[in-house]
Image (cartoon, rainbow, N blue to C red):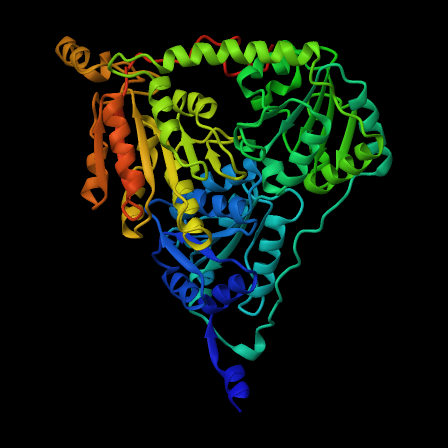
Length: 575
């Protein structure tokens, strides 16, 4: 009788959505509630989903997508209609570019008011098609579970990405008998595909003929959990390797075969490059000269067929799951028992370049002048950071120099502006990493290294961090501007010259802005530091406190810059 009673009870659209998401193993929901989705958030909590209320829909969507990358299961992002959804589009575009799974649930105006100019009426399903793999509105309350299952499945199958579900306000509070709602079981894990055996044999032949081989490890390899097989591949072949920014940690940065400190030389001179879950886009300079050798042979491993052959015709293309394909390569290479020698001219050229680059960096890092430069800051941060911490990073120089100086030792432990180069992701990503760490490894620290400009995009998420007691450490590397700023005295002189809107450089921000007080305002700990000793002391205090969120505002020389590069960081496509 109790089963019969349960089937006859009426449930709301909000409950159906929440229970359907939970049935698909969605564990986290980030969002901002309002009409018409408040009830969805409450129903999600009742269904056992953790709800994290954010301060801006962009940050909410960034966080939900980062959960997708870290766990392999999409996070949900809950937003209100019209402007709420439009703010989330930034997160959806970012998720698609990074190939991370996320499911956005957007409230929309009541169906019977369509075309009448309803409150926040907007063509949401159509708008989301540009930013997602799947965008739909369920035709009825009964259809919701099937649409939710399809959204979750599409977000994770093939190349992962964003999916959108539109829920009109009248559906949220609409009711239906539970018996009429078809329960849809959890979709199967994404199917794993292998490369064709003939292509594997071709790869082995190409690799064995290489004079200057190079392995490039992308974030696709990190998402595929291919770390164990890739480490075995390196041990077996003895190849040098380069990680892409978020491919860092798949193999520890401290591994003897890592040639990140000679990146330009390695890319420019390699004659055979094996790409593991990395794309030949702007981040790898499209694979063309002068950044690459004109006759370089690329071997591409990717799970997206359309990616193979982009910008450069590959010598061999392997279509499949990175982890499984590397396993195939391992068994083929083991049969030959072949290893690339460690005493080649290639290795000595790379090691020589690594040494000279590291020497230049070391000289910059050990400068004791105040205000500090970027290299000094990162040198002292690196000395203290735990090896298992998650590093979130965004900014211009802050992110670029931080990437080379802050090492990662574990996979999926670096989150940054990514393929889309998005500013504003830092705090959302840090919140996602901290919420996941709290469940899986409560002792793990999340350290968010931000430029002062980057911090400004989502700075109010500091309140979210304090509200949920997430012990995130934010380090703002403050140079008073975007790329570079002005010191206090120059700023004062400029105020005398005329109206700041006419004379202040567009890149400048307020000198010595006290960002640490933003953290203190919400009950976290704030530190203002100007010297290496103050920086070390502040970071030690933050790391010793496992419960309180902290922000260290590090003043650096507004004119501090990257060391001289062989090439400008952004390859112009007209090269």
